[in-house]
Amino acid sequence: MKKPTLSVALLQKIFVAANIRRWNDQATPVEFYELDKQAHKIVIAYLLAHFEEIENGKKIDWERLILQFCYEFFERIILTDIKPPVFHKLTQTHNKELVDFVCKELEEDLGRFAFFESMRKYLYGEIENLEKEILKASHYYASKWEFDIIYHFNPKMYDVQNIKNIIDRQVEEHYHLAGIKQIVLYEDMRELVAMFGQLRFQKRWSQTPRVPPTSVLGHTLVVALCAYLLGCDLGFCRQMQINHFLCGLFHDLPEILTRDIISPIKRSVEGLDEFIKQIEEEEVRKKILSKVPEAIKKDILYFTQNEFTNRYKTTKGVVYLPKGEEFLGKYNEDSCCAIYGEFLKFCDHLSAFLEARISMRHGISSRELEEGARNLEYLYNAKEINGVDLGYLFREFKA
Image 1 (cartoon, rainbow, N blue to C red):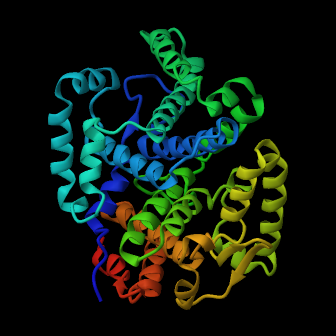
Image 2 (cartoon, rainbow, N blue to C red):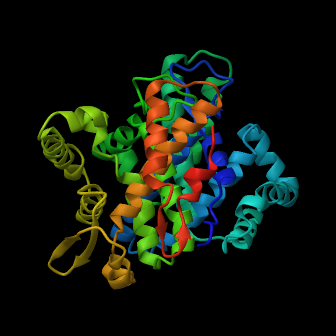
């Protein structure tokens, strides 16, 4: 068996974003972190991309949107200490040197991925496309969402009004995008973006201290990244790769409405887990699906209902299948629009394992973290799919 290209070192770099505090030169009512901002950004980008297809008749390359998001995400991890106004000035005069530095820092962890040289060209600014414009608009709107909270908390602080004006103008420059118009004009869309944003404030492992204290929204991005990057080795078709990223991103969406109910409670009370799912589905339909066009509604249902079950689409609807690698042999084709749900469950548990182990490495531990990490390592230490030793990631990461 071969080791996955996704390394423990790269996983640790991804979690660095959960430690990067945003707006750390401002008085903020809550703390904002880069991992959450990036997750919010790609969720907004998903909405903007769909509205371009629905209202402007544009064709979105979803894999390109995901990859370009990843390029920007990894660059942000490396250049995190540069304030945005300074960063924008530096990119006008020294962009190539900055990109070369970023790529050098990431080469050991990302160099074996086929997309690495494309990332360099993209960050050089040699590529312009609709997906890049959507990412730029979603970046500005996610920043605006954060800064509006800061502004209302303390509008009289030095330079706060100026920063607000700059961010508002940056969003206004993208009014030609159908999705930005929707968000600006309609309360339903603003509420939807805000609901996603609220998952920034719901903390994982809420009953035990942990460092860094990742949010539900940040966790979903880690799951999405793990699913996409591991999929590069596992031979998944293009559509399955897209589905896995988006399903990872949206799999905890119902927790906006019910909050995270911990697994021991679900397991201990007979029938509770199923009843909670019924409540979640009802609330999602009433408070989220009622606000979006049919195409987005179908997507969200596909990504959130029975999220860890193997499934594919037919003209008659969604077909759910039992566990087993034979699923890949039959449905790993773009036309099936399939989701390998048990693989996503692995990615979800890998993220939870890392959350526990990284905290323990920082010296913050508890019985819950130790037991959780130990149980997950025992469950997955021999995991293998398509000849790739996925269990290596659990065995290799030691606190």
